[in-house]
Length: 281
Length: 316
Image 1 (cartoon, rainbow over the protein chains, first blue to last red):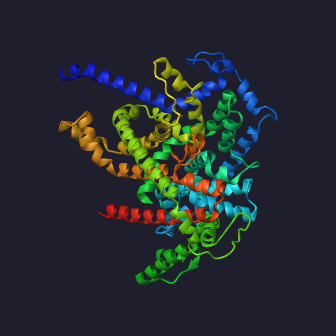
Image 2 (image 1 turned 60 degrees about the vertical axis):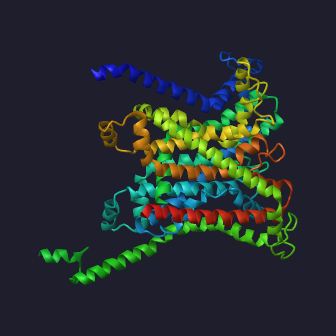
Image 3 (image 1 turned 180 degrees about the vertical axis):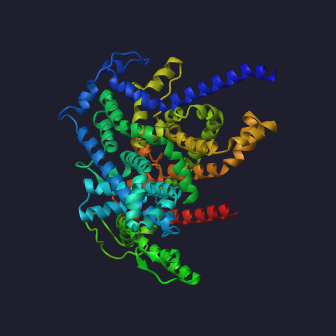
């Protein structure tokens, strides 16, 4: 009897949950939705008040942003791609063996792991100035190499935390079986554990790519022309294209698209990694 | 025959060992393995020493010298002059105060909203996990681009938000002097509440279902379950996420820089923006270097004590 009485109430609760979800999703994603929409609107449609939802889409703004030689935007995208990929690969290459040594042999667990994970919590501006001065001395300002090194540095803490968490759950029997067959430590690492870590490697690759793609401060400080990443390049648009909202919106959309797409694959890992890192690190 | 096999390894005959010997051998092997495993740390240590260690040492040296852009080797030892100049500037304390205020307000709102959302949305997301991805979208976007997009959305003439508010008779310029403080905080909260939400949701979902059943038997359902049972159990996650969010908000740079550049006046100048302006706009190298050193030491000290506290909590 009680059950049937509760049913309509449950329905109301469920509907209001959906409603709250819808409102929250709309509010927090409003700038993204609005920008994407604006990027497809004709210039005339952008300025109408109240804003219109139904309009004839146009690709004019994208052509303007990506079109031959009119803006530097394609090169900004290329820069971000190179910097993100290079940095992520270096971060993985450096932190994967380190995680192996920490988890399987306990080397550096007491000092290196907390040290590296805490880099993430330092205000980046602390390092902006010394790195700028160092780059000026060695001539790495405004270069791909310089930005790749920065991107790797930023990604290393995340990568290390992920790998440590993953390897802790990997059964030790694998190592021992390898050892019995006469595998050396580096064989165990690269021939047994590395292939097994494929899912986590992809997740780390995606996440560190997102982190470096979204990085702004170092891009602003260390680049001027040649190696400008998308985040910094897109802000040039606002000042130099102040009134061209359509082109700006198209540039924004292109700038947020890669991390959004990759994020859709990598998001289940984020929560877990943050918690495990904070608890174990 | 069988003992022969036991004492053979890859065809070589091995002298039978006493248990004590075995123990020693094993320990030696472990020790050797540990030692040779150090080589796997070399890459990371060398990399970090090069990119972070070397500049830090150079920075210490710079901070005690009279440096300019034209003379990076320094004109000579100047003692604590840089530090004195950096710390005596009242604008520094204003910026520090702003960063602290910004960090605390944003953290409180983000964690509060996230907690509320976890209570409300957990049953919904348990059945449809993919919905979480929609809530996660803002945190995938670069804060700098988020700032630019809000500039578009909140623009007086083409922005969608003022456009609709106009329709219901509210005229508000979010980017004006009067409202900019609110806007800057609101953007940070809107972008990073999803992060706090995701972490608290993960903590909530890792609670065993038995617990809810047991609580239901005792008569705790709905909000009572959340407050009496769930809240105490996810408190560690709340502490962690508050800590992370505070640190991230405290060092805020990107979206404020893009939106206001620290202005109008210095009203939205956070500590990060202050140091940036000192170095790149006013060319005050010495004080800027000294300031970043001070900030480094302060953060390390804070982290050290924070970690100690966390370790003690875990031990208990």
